[in-house]
Image: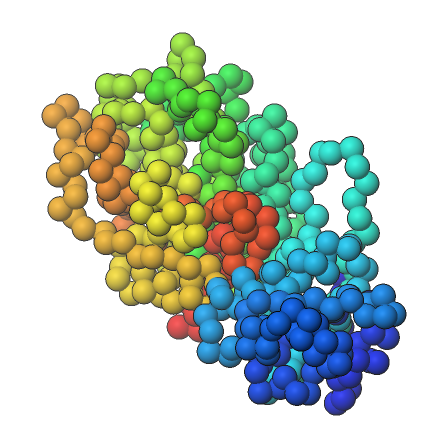
Length: 484
C-alpha cells in the first residue's frame, strides 16, 4: 500500500476527483470558504438545515454528479488526539465501505499540517487492513494507494506504515479462533515471523520450565493436554542501540477459569485472553519495521487454562521461579501466575525497562469500562510518561497507585503470599502488587491492564471491536524514551 504525496500548491476539486472517486477532506474552520465542492456542500447543508459549525467532529458526505463520494470533516487543532481520531474514523467509514483502490485526502489547515495528515493517513490505513474472516463471501478489493494533498512534507510515512502493521498483527492474532491458535500453533506462527524478520527465537517448554523451577507457570499449564505451553522469547537487536526494553505479554490462548469454571457468558471470547502477548508482538513488529535503535526482548507466556485431573486448584501452594511460595485462592487468576515467572526471567536479563501487557483483571474494566486502560508502574516518572504517551497517541490510559499497604491483603498464613483474594476488592491493584514481587533487581516496570482491548463500537482510530490498543501507546512512549 503506497502513500503518495501531491506537491501541487493548488488543491482543487478537479485535482482530487482526477486522483480518486473517494475523497476525504479535513479542514479547520478558518478554511471553510476555501473548500472544494463548495456549491454541493452548501446545498447539502441548506437541505439538512445545518451550518458550518455543525461539521465540527461530525462528518458530512457528498455524492457528486460524476459519481465521486466526498466525506468532509472539520477538526480543531487544539482538540485531543483521541477526539480527532474518533471523528476521522467516522469520516472515512463511508469511503472504505465501498472498498476503493485509492483514496484522496485533502488537508486545509494551518501549516505545518503534518500531524493532521499523519492522523488521517493512519486512521484510513489501519481501518483498510484485512482481518481474519472465515465467511464464504468474496472480499472487496484492497486499498492500494493513499494520496495526500495540501501538506508540505511527509517525514512520517515509514512510522505510520509500521504502526499500521503492528496494530494489524495484534488484532489478527487476537481475533484468530482458539482451535487455530493453540500454544503449539502460536509458537509455529512466531517462529515463522522470527525467521522472516530476523528475530532471535528461544522457547522454554513446560518440561524445561518445570526443571527450572518455574512452578507458577507450570501450575496453570499442567491442566491442559497436550502439554504445549511455553515461554517464548523473541529478540530484536540494533547495532547502535544502548538501551534494552523488555515486553512481557500474557498469552492465555483459552481461559476456562480452571476449577473455578467460568459460566458460558463469561467464557465467551476467552480465546482473546492472549491479547497481551499480541500487543507485545505488535510493538516488536513496529519497532523492527522502522529499525529503531533499541534492543527489544519480547517475552510471551503462552498457555491455556483448562480443567482436568492435573489442573491446579484452590489451596494448592506452589513455588515460583524466584523461590516465593504462593497460596492459590482462585484458579481464574491464572494470568498473574504465568506472568510471575515470565517477569522473573525477563528481569534477570536486567533490561532498562519492562512493560507487561495483559487482559488481567475484571476490576480494571469495572473501574474504567472499555474506553480506557489502566497502568501501574513502580516509578512515578514512568507512570506519568505513559499517561502522556496515551494522550499523544490517542490510546488513553489512567495511572493507578502502586501502594505497598495493599500488600497486607495478600498475606498468607501458609505461604509467602496469596495469589489474590476471594473478595476481589481493588484486584487490579492487588494484581500489580503481586506481579511486582517477581521483578528482580532495580528495574523500572510498568504493568498495562488492557481493559479497553475490545470496545463494541470501535475505539479512537480503530473501527473494529478488537482494536489493537497498546501498540500506538507503546510506540509513542518509546519515542520519548529513546530521546531521553
